[in-house]
Structure formats: C-alpha cells, structure tokens
Length: 182
Image 1 (cartoon, rainbow, N blue to C red):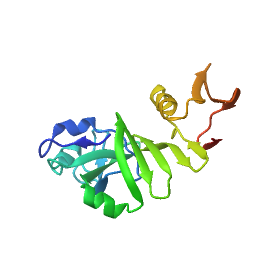
Image 2 (image 1 turned 180 degrees about the horizontal axis):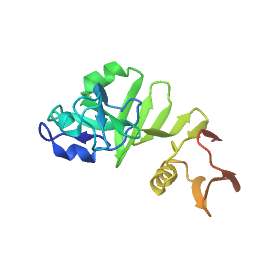
Image 3 (image 1 turned 120 degrees about the horizontal axis):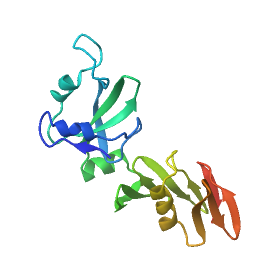
C-alpha cells in the first residue's frame, strides 16, 4: 500500500503504489507532490522532476500515488497516526485491526463493520444486509476475501469471466454496490 521511506531521498520510492485520492485509514496526508513521470520534465515546469521530488522525500514518512495523469503523478506524503490520534479522528470506531495481508476489519459504535482491502471497502455489514464492492478490482484476492469473510452460505465465484454471488441456490451477477440480505 504505502511505501515507507527508509532514508531522506530514498530511491525505493519508485516502488510506491497507487492508493487513490481518498483517505488512507490510519494515516494523515501531510502534503501532495505534483511530479513528472515522463522523464522529460525540467526545473522550469510546475511538476517536480523526479530528482527534485527525491530531495523532498523524508525518512520515516509514507508515500503513495494519489492520482495518475498522462505525464505527471500526484504523490501523497503521509504520517502514520498513533492510536490516540486515530481514536480522536474517528470517535465512532470501536476497533480496527489488520486481519490479513493488506486487509483491515473495522467495527463501528453503531454495530456496522467494514472490511477494507488496500483502500477499498469491499464488504460493509449494516444490520441485516451486506454491501459488496470490488472498487473495480475484481481479482482473485478480492474474491478470496469475500469468501473468507462472508457467511458460509454466500459465495462469490467467477464463471467464464463473469463474477456471480451464490446464495440459497440462486446465482446473481455481481456488480459493485450490490446488497445481499442476510
């Protein structure tokens, strides 16, 4: 998800991943950098050259690509929140813990639960319904998380390139935001 800079000017930042422009749970966006990704930028352009961006990379901070354009990227610099800050920023959260690789389960005071894979809330439990969302990432990992955390009588499968929800002997084509009654 986010790349943690090991030193000032860490060249490993080239490996940072796309996190999107929304909030990254557990982190605070400190600043956004507009960076050339064509390799042809110059110092007199609005976008930072990669070497100028490296001069701004700080050890211990986290970085992720927020948005990608044809010739530039927006890279966010983040600070990890401690437990007290996380609680103050999200007072309605009872608990939030990592349950699998890149996967976090959050429980809210109103009883709702959310399973987040990377930066996408893929399962929302709200009362007697579940809302499923792949965020456009209909991958084997997303389907594996669905099947691991959904009740045993609900399965998400892919048949001949189409994803379906199987429940009570019924097969329904999957779409982001689909609601399933428990």
